[in-house]
Image (cartoon, rainbow, N blue to C red):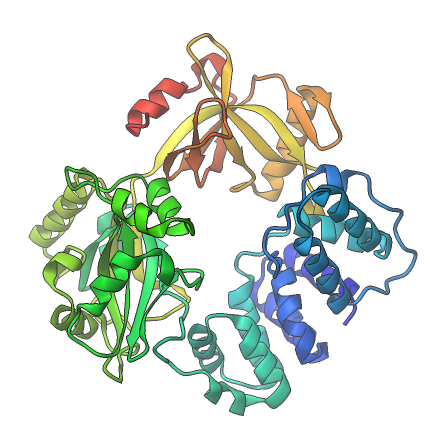
Length: 513
């Protein structure tokens, strides 16, 4: 398959908001694709690189080779070239990557170059594509969407299911079954603004603590214990204390879903960044386990001693969890049997408040009858978190790529410091509608004071309201902290830069050091 075809379909998907049209486009795409090309093409359409981070900076992309006149690049050739880039290391690595990228860009047409640039810089974002791709794959192969969705859940990814279906048809779905030792995609939660709103959607339910840790899936069988993250990475060797915990449970075979997190001396969760750093560390694990021990807290069980529990209601799975896991290792919860009972709603709100007081993120409301819909952000699990917002000043903006070519996209955000200057707290391009993108391109262009070809520095006058999930320490920024999951709500032209929030107030609000 030509890479140009992936770029064309990606552009068409990006330009339509209709789910039905996305499904048609993807079904046509799958029918025309060779099975071997599908895993790579799916990743590109979703804006992912199979190789992960390539260590490529803007300097390696700024001065590109002249484009080719006609498309000749295949999907396989692009994948091979990027694999070669990812393999470059050692002295002269940047120059080596740059040379390989020059060769790749020189073989690409102008349209393909823009698409490549978007992939390499993260500007190709089709976050909801996997869900639409399941529908398109089902349509292309004449397979029920529910069967495809379940296979993807059990496989842990869309790509192997697509390869199997396109090569062998519906019988390939039998290859994908719940198996201890093979991680599956975790069930995800949608969002609500209040606990009451979430309960109204869920009906009879449980309200569980939402822990700010690292999501883990723990598998145990006769071969031992394996631990996987939500991205299905195997982190078993990094978490010996969790292995011991799982080995001590009274069942021979199981799959548990939960969180790993670290606690301080008062029993409050330590910052997420510390837990994530511990789980991500591959060196001197024994010392790390002593200096920052982590603990597992479980909230679901998917299989016990050969019983597949995925399709059972939440209440039945929790009963099985209670039999397997002692109370001190289970997430705390409050049960709401009757959503119309004011006393039950008050108790749920009180539980939410108490959860926040304990230092946790919020709560997850889980419908009593809900099965475990792995890999999906369904309506039966609903998370509720307090919304943090802050008014910041735009300090600079990066030029967009891919479908945002010609626009000013990624915002550099700053808060006021004590001396009246502005301190950068991070970047974001999230939350921008097409209309808002057009508006900020014109408005920030008028405030520009310098332009190095990739980043436009602007006068610090425009205030933007930003929503975020919390703060974390960061050596990358002069204030020593950055916002987690920052996204644009709206511009505040009614406010001056002098009215923006301060670094000190943000730090104080989150107890940051």
